[in-house]
Image (cartoon, rainbow, N blue to C red; front, top):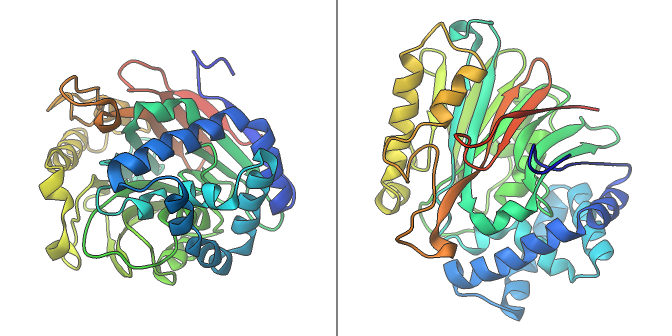
Length: 356
């Protein structure tokens, strides 16, 4: 697909190692961009570099393999195709965990339940905010895998799980959070893939509840049958959040009471409070007249610009600190269509992507 129109789409299939080989071959340039961007990010955000990155990533090999051997095989296949050390590919999949004390301020996410949408269908969406260097890594990835649902997601090439949905009608959005002291656990982006490998909403919630996380996050999980639940994770602690009046919004601070006392995100990124409240207020104003594409106005909102829901470059800060909306995603779980806008959604159209 013309990158001026939409994000490049790639499909992989077959056994897990072979899928990794395919992805490494098809997306060599994008994965190399991911690796280079995170080399700089690890230096800037975590003060780790070179061989130290590989040493810190190495313990996650066994953690990921124990969680899901197929995911580890897929990562190994990518490393083989690229001729890169396995630890480098593991590092980008554990990127949030490696920079746990200074994670990115990413994302505003939304779920609308059928009782308040005009078409009586569930809708999900979010803006993904991160550094501009990762623009060259974006792909829409379709993964056809034996005995598991086919996955369709927006991701940074080389990272096995991100924002998306599957053929079974399960979808997930992500918000990075910050709290407490780190503990070894399953990387957030690997858990995202576990959610997308799930056949049902219950299976998806179970993969969050049963597997201690190596980071802090909010997984907004929905299903085509019309339900959505938020899961706030503070390393090995989890709290469920439920929609109020058919709406669930989230940004980059804890909302539930269980982990709230340890929240550091709202202190570091106070715009998170504005984005979450602003999204909820705008949606409630159009209650019962909402559609999937009605979320576009929210995701294009500029209150508190440039640190708004639709985030733009801040000329007062440096390139590696300059967070922008790299992409915006809308998901129709019932119809199986993912819409993605490349870059701030106020400047780019939403392009539809369906399962092949």
